[in-house]
Image 1 (cartoon, rainbow, N blue to C red):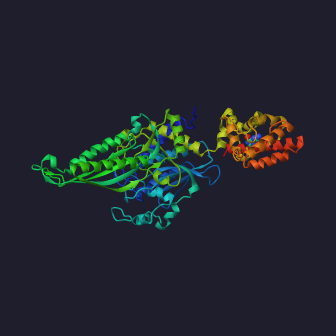
Image 2: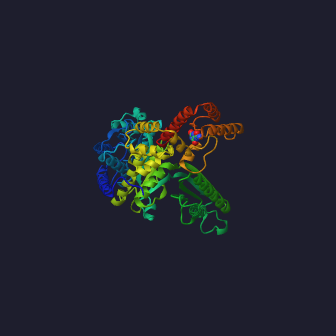
Image 3: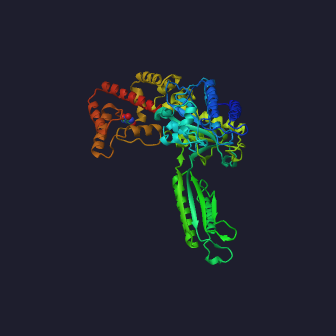
Length: 582
Ligand code: 2AL
C-alpha cells in the first residue's frame, strides 16, 4: 500500500481554493461576459501579478521572465538545487473555459502550499511557471511562453502581428518587456530534472471510464492536408450515370473509407475531413471539382504515417476507378511528443494510489509540454472534465476530482524531488534494512546503520557506516563472504547481492581462458593457504590486475592477509552504499 502524504481533508481544502482562484482568474478578462485573456494584454499581466502573489504566500521567490511567463521557486535542500518544474498556461482562447491551463498552475501552487505548510524541503527545488502564451490566440503562433524557456524563439516571431497590426515586439515593449532580451528567458538544460503538467483532459475518455485521473502517454502528432478530386462537370439531366466523372461522389466514397480505415487501425488514431468545397456547386450540375481537408492525429508518428500512406493510396484508387484525378498536399506536420516513461510510471503509481487504478491515454490536444519536451523529460496528468467540453464557457470540473488530482500530483512531485536519503530516514525499519543489507551480509552492521537515522546528509551516513565497518574482525569476514563469490565465477541467481557482484566483476574477461585458468588456480592456492575465499574490490579492476593482486597477496602472512581482506570488504561495502543512494 502506497502511503499518500496529503490527507483527503487537506486535498478537499486545496481543491476548494483552486476552484475559487480559477473564478478569480476568470474575472481577469478583456470581455465582461465570457473569458478572453490573450498574451501580453493588461489582463495577462494582472493574472501574472495575482499568481505571483499566491506563490509568495507559500514561500516562493517570484519573477517574470523576459517573455512574460510568471515564475516561482521553492528552494530545495541546498541553494541552487536542480528543480522539478511544474506548470501550464494562463492565456486563453476567445470565450474560453476557466480551467484549460489555469488548473495546472493552481494545482502546482497547492503542491508547494502543502510542502510549505508542513515545513518540508525536498532534495530538489520546485519551480512553477504560468506560461504567457500556449493557445496562440493573439498572434497566431503558439507556445511562445514555453519556447521562451527552451530558448527556441525564431527571430521571425517578433514581427508577427495581431489583428490590430501590433507586432510581438511592440506588444512586448507596451507590456514593459525588452524584445532584445528574449534569449534571457531560456533556462539552462541542467536547471530542471523534469517537467510535470496537470491539465483538464479536454476530451471524453476519462468520463467514459468513470475515472477522475489519467496519465498521458504522448501528445498526438498531427498532419494536415489540402486534397482535391477533379472530374468533369456536366449536365445533371443528360449525362448517363455510367459515364459520369463525379468528383463529389469520389470524395464521398473516400470520406467513408477514411472513417472505416482509421477505426480499423486502432483506438488512438483519429482522422477528420473538416471542410469540403464543391464546384461549380449547383443543383443541376455534376460536381467537377472538390476541395477537402484531411486532419489526422496519433500518439505515434509511425502509425500516423502508415495511416496517411494508406488513406492517400485509397484516394488514388478511387480516383482511378472513377476516371478522376486525386491530389493531396501536406501543409502542416507536427511530430508526436512522447511522455517520459519513468515519469509516466511515477504518475501512474500516484494515480493508482488515489483512485485504485490508472488509465493511460494520449492527448489529442497540444500543450506546453510539447515545447518543453525538447529539453527536459515531460509527464502529464489529466483530470476529467464534464462531457469533455473545453475551449468553451461550459468547461467544468468537480471539486472531488480536483481533490484527487492534487493528492496524486503532490505525491508524484514529492517522490520525484525527494532524495533516497529522505526516503531512508522516513522508511519503516524493515524497509530501511532492506535498502542497505545488499551492501554486506552482516546484520549487526545493517542494524547499526539503520539505528543511526535520521541522517542530515549522505556523508554523515557514510561516516557512520565506515565507523561501524572499522570494528569488523575475522568472523565478520567469513560471514560476509557468503555474498561474495570467487573472482572469475559469476554469481548466480536473482538476488540483489548476486546482481551487484556480477556488475562489480564485469571487467573480468570470462572469455579469456588463460586468465580464467590462472584465477581458478590462484583461488585454489589462496583457499588452501588462508582457509577462505580470496576477496578483493573488483569494481574498476581488470582480470589481469586482480590476478596480479592475488599473486602478491598469496605471499602475505595470515595476519597481513586478514587485514587486507577486511579493508577490501570495507571498500566493497561503502561502494555499494554509495550505489544504493545514488
Ligand atoms: C567480489 C565480488 O563479488 N565483488 C567484489 O568486488 N569482489 N568477490 C570476491 N571474491 O572478491
